[in-house]
Image (cartoon, rainbow, N blue to C red; front, side, top):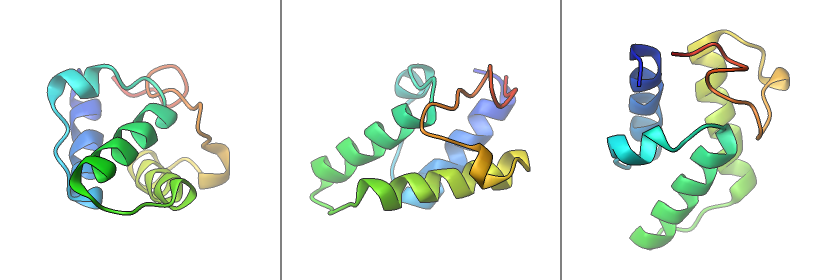
Amino acid sequence: MGLDTVEIVMDFEKTFEIEISDDAAAKMVTLRDVREFVLAEYQRLGRTADPNEIFERIRAVTANFTTIKPEKIGLDTRFIDDLGLD
């Protein structure tokens, strides 16, 4: 994982108040992967979550981090290929 990836993962951890291990983060290729991880963690922790609301929060974090307009960011947006994160 490059510095950009580490930083955005830290932003996701802070936003969702969860921990994402390095191994889990390394497996996250798309924003869908992040959403699925967050949903699984929420379920494990007994928290309720709306998948659409979770994605909107992920999209907002990603847009803020990359300065890409939110409407250009989708579930299948890839960190390296589409966002240029290392």
